[in-house]
Image 1 (cartoon, one colour):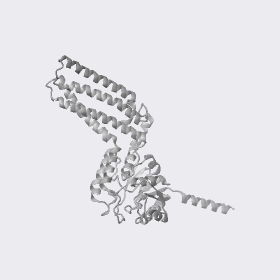
Image 2 (spheres, one colour):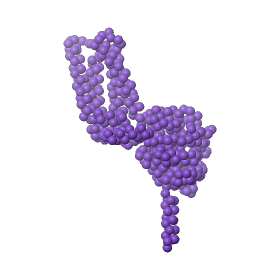
Image 3 (tube, rainbow, N blue to C red):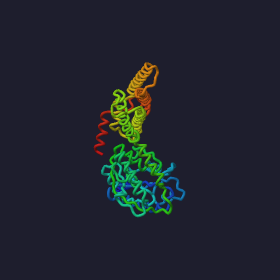
Image 4 (cartoon, rainbow, N blue to C red):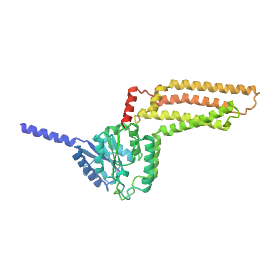
Length: 422
């Protein structure tokens, strides 16, 4: 009886080990029957090495995007698990496969033979060591002749990766590698939504915004095994990546132009007002420059409100942690403060325009040589109404809350600690 019980216990432990999944290799698939046998066998070898080195069990998931060449049956026959993803697109397939993954680690790679999944063994090691996302760098691991078009290698990837590093500072050399590993919980927390090739940028950007710990290991890029053209369209997909960089960076799209525009316009307005009060003062900034400066300041003010709204939306959506800008916004501004400041600006503008009207009357309604007072009064009215309307916009984006966003000192401190650790 004891021997039988021991045998049953050992069998149940063996079954548990077989059912346990620590690593899921996910491949997006759209008519890849030609390459799947090689890729699945290569992925199996990677899982064997991962098991030998880290004691982790794994599975292979084929995220099929509507193949019509029998890829699904072929993959199942080779021991992979097929997940049907109805929404078309590279990113949609990987998101569907990632959500279906059973492992705590996800290793993503293309199903065209262009990547060696055994390069992912080191990536899993980085995740085991505490990283939350590990990117493969083709520029550090080597690009085989004919594996990447020259415009992608020397223009597209370096430029897009450079912009991404400038905007979001992940500190990586290859933001668009198709071989990458991520923790399953981190993958879910990012709330990824990019259906196309822009998914590659989205994952890195949102990981940087949430201050995940990002590592990088060398990987090789090989010529793919397909006898047809790849799904990638360099110019179209390059633009999709670029626009995604800007969409997820309101500070650069709106904030930087707002600061630059404000500095220029305020300098011009100061010179114009000085010249108005002290005729003949240098520089002689007249009517045309004053009108231009007022228009530029109005645009810059609105751009600043849009920068705040974009940052607030990112925090509310969960893919952006509060930064010093949003924390300061939460402390200093509310719907009421925007309404009060807007009201004061409107009152000031009406007062200046009233003075202009009175002076016009004293001149017997004759024309004046300077429009600076009228420009200043109109500008105050414009900024005041923008504050009022912008206050309601920020309240709506902030979740219909008058405080826009509530950030406790504890959460702010933890955000800073995460940033320092990263």
